[in-house]
Figure (cartoon, rainbow, N blue to C red):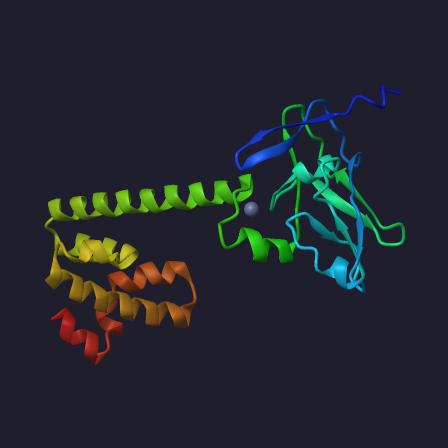
Length: 229
Ligand SMILES: [Zn+2]
């Protein structure tokens, strides 16, 4: 048995202030730390009036006030993709934080605070957990990449003078930016797209969509026929 006084975690700086970090490998399923504090009975007016960010509701009646200094578990931050969970025993009125993944030394320990907390405290300011941060970065990168692609497409289109080329790739992309390059061509290609869409809706296949945009005149409705001419 390891020395029970040596804890596998420490309080340290995290992105959002302080957090709890593993100092030793923590195996999946291991109890890490108990979340504790005075028990509040919501049937008592005085208890029910307590308000702070560290309240942990155990049941309809009982809530743990985790704001006490000794409750080191209060340093554990929220994550939408956590490596631990809060394991609540309603009967014993106990909250145990347990690893749900193998946690490496240096890794921050976190658990999901639950939808209520998320809605009240995290959503308004934007969740700063790794999972959400990654999502944001990915979205931003994708938006940048798309912008770049659009620019390149627009450039490439300007170089090509063949109508067919323009119409073909336009039917595929149809991005508004590219439309500025050749306004008159866009009209016809838009019509192509419409007819292509209509046809593919019937056929329901990608291949037929590509075909349709090439052989559009057949399926062109009177409306789009005007634009194409
Ligand atoms: Zn998050």
